[in-house]
Image (cartoon, rainbow over all chains, first blue to last red; front, side, top):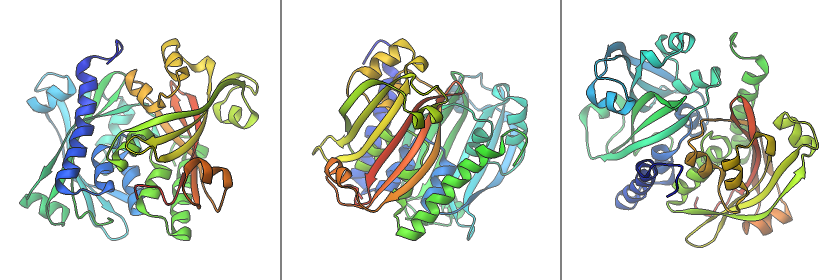
Length: 191
Length: 191
């Protein structure tokens, strides 16, 4: 620990890393599972590398909603703040296989107009929008977990359980721009 | 292509992605090889996820040198500008196995004093220093490649050929903070 970083932040990071190692030992995860859970780069870019081909975003649902309490706490905004809620799948373009399902919340107050227009346009992956505007950011993993079974994930991902999930924030200019929770199957189609 | 990004940048990115896919088809790379070549997150964090354990940095050589022309072009500084040159190995802490070898150049003029002190202290991975100071950044892959055989890499990595390499910049506040070239074996010890 050092004077430049509050104890809680350092702990956060170490906790996520240790939790991934521990899930890995407990459930026999593969290296790619751990990378999908814990990497701090663009998920779109990572999925294109794993799949060795283009991926695309399919929007399931998108609307501006009053920010729910849990997301508001993560985003450091007041609950009820107008927030873009987006449910998406990232699919492999070659055959339409779903790779991950994600739900995200973005407070409208944090969005520059051009970025907002792109985000609101359906089917734009956040990583691609950030690359387009050359946004400098850091990603902070909040938590990760393992789900034994879940009927709705089984339908969405068209893949059998168990599932893994991670929650993380993308932080720009010192504030969370977006909080994202992602789910994928351990029988991820390209493993 | 759109009006927010010069053609050359978009092309750069697509070129790296396509080059990785093409290397992959040509040499039968595994998904983790492609991830190591093309991901845009912290390499230290990625190696800890792949290895499922701590990694450490071992400095081979570090000194302030006049910036060589090739690095200067990538960093957008004048050749000869005082630059920190660092040759390192990232090793698996459990058994000391080398995972990657890297050479980097950082222009001193781009470094904040505290960051500079940490970088100059031997054995601090750049990803960890960036996390410590919560630096927002983006990583831009410049080029990737395949090396049939190389005696000095074989000694450094204690792993047989062939090898893969990537060159990338870490950009903060619109300017390259550091340019890095990394090398690893396709028989990477944790694959």
